[in-house]
Length: 300
Image 1 (tube, one colour):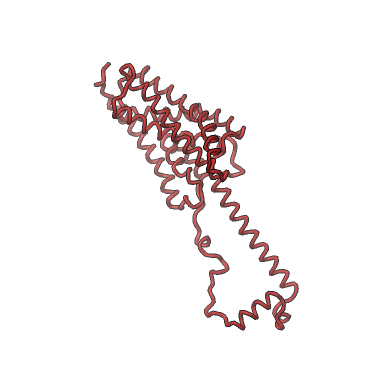
Image 2 (tube, one colour):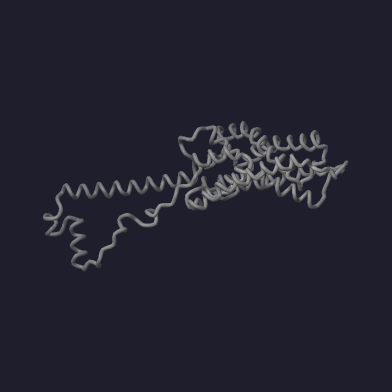
């Protein structure tokens, strides 16, 4: 087995272009989330999900992010209540304050001069509408943070679910690949097969973590019940993703380069980038089934 294989320069350059493009796509949602203070209005676990997936599914990830996942932009009006925006030039006297309260209650001797019954009804209606508007705004914010847009098509909801398990796979593969490479572990003289086992173990751990912090905030249950649901949902989702990725790893390592492409080359990680795309394709139908059967929670 020749481990002194030198990757052709043309392939190295091509791999570098694709990896650099992935890095640019990764940075775009990070900058946008920081600019919009996304941690205040979006599900926290989705903050790393968007950039990670943009690194290998750039255009599709950015389309879904800007269409359905982008956090709301902070407004100055959120920091200051409109009714308190204009402060009085001087503090009202106790008599003025009492008279104001009496006028609101309609008991002031001067109330008839200042307020008509119709005006009282209008005031009460306005206060009621204002409170309803605030409640609707709060509900909308919570829905944006913990749910998903009602007008989002099913395919987009499912694809974002795939992004969710894809994030666990990417992190698991990064840790697993470099761990095996660094330790020199192998099975029958090859690092590929041990890589598949270690990658899957780490991907499952990261995947369950991501799934748990998707389910728990939406259900309000941070106990073992949510953990069991996370394991149940992510095991099938992540396994279907890894089937596509691992199949491609065997193809390019065994079938194309005969075990000669090493982990520390750009070509290797370009191949892994391709594998993530294939994994997304194999995970899509499984996630469709899981989400439509309500086994897996739709991600925000």
